[in-house]
View 1 (cartoon, rainbow, N blue to C red):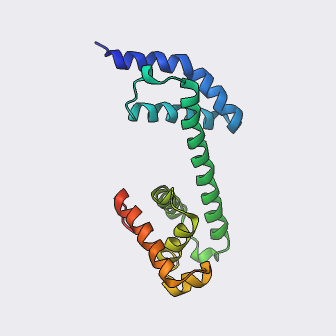
View 2: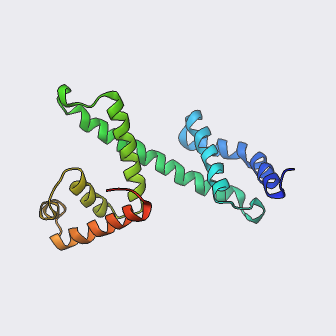
View 3: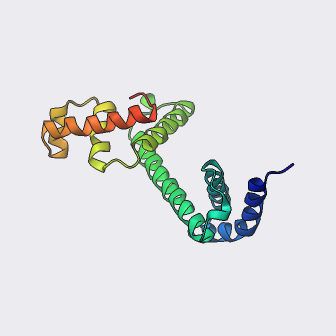
Length: 168
C-alpha cells in the first residue's frame, strides 16, 4: 500500500516535472544536463523529506533548488577546467594517467564541496597550505594578509573539514 506522503510526492512530481525540465533546459541549453538537474532537484526534495502539500509556491521552491544545482555544476566545471589547464602545462612525463586524472578531479570536487560556503581567501589559504605546502608566512605574503590571519583562515577551513568528516 502506497503511503499518503509518497502518493502526494508522485502527484507533485507529475504536476511539476515537465515545467521544471523546460525551465532548467532554457538555462542550460543541454538536454542531458537539464534532465540530470531536474532529477537531482526532486532527489533533494525527497532527501529533505518535505511534504509537498506544505509547499506554498512549488515552482519557486523547485527553481530555487535547481538554480543552486546549476550554480554548483558551473563552479565544478570551472574548477575542472582550471585543473586541466594546469595539467597541460606539465611535461608529459609528469602528467598523471587518465585514471589518476579522474581520481584527482573527483578529489577536487569533494574538496570544493567541503569548502563550499567559506570565503574565497579561506579556501585559497587552505589550498596553498595543503596542495602547495606553503608556510603560513608564505601564504600571508601571497594573500597580502598577516600570518595570524592565515592561522585564523586555516582554523576555519580545518573546522569545516572536521564537521564534514573529511580528512585534510
